[in-house]
Length: 171
Image (tube, rainbow, N blue to C red; front, side):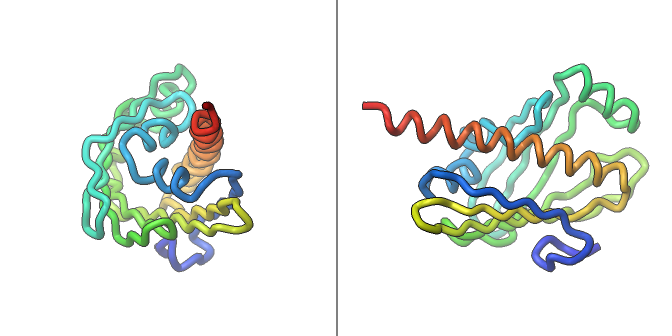
């Protein structure tokens, strides 16, 4: 499997531009409150259990399906509604880049495998361009689910960054 940084055919890539400060975008990726505000797709709950922002540091969380559609989707895949996910930061460049490697060890009947997510941030004319690249999964259905999940997560990211920016503009 190609890892996210290789940007090969085995990668999923999203690009978004935000009218926000780099500090706010960075905070949504690197703080417990920030991540819990958006990192779960719609219909899921996300709780950070460990967050050590350094190379080799832990990024562990629990994701639980709470929406009926999401519970049914996971049941159809013979997956439990709650997954404990362990990861670690492989690369951390403040305000520029994060690479996170998750241990995909919660899929019934599938041997554990690494799953990389790379976030690159670029400040351009007072805006932040964010490029998110993620591995595809070995299973096409899991990849389809990941694309749907990441699309939903990035919608929630946009809402979280807008709310954060609005709060900062209040007197």
